[in-house]
Image 1: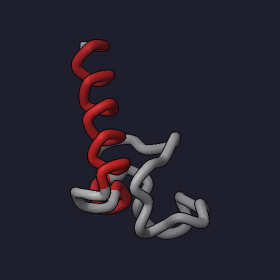
Image 2: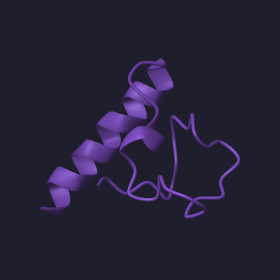
Image 3: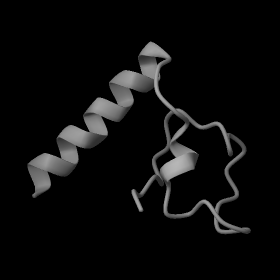
Length: 53
């Protein structure tokens, strides 16, 4: 389970560096109301607080 999550996070970071893929905020657990106060929102490509829904 840990390895799978690590690989998913690694893949998201690779896509973010390459500039491809949708913003993380679209699929983040904290994408509602005032739950996230990051300045990159709603177009973050890399986020240390990202949690998949």
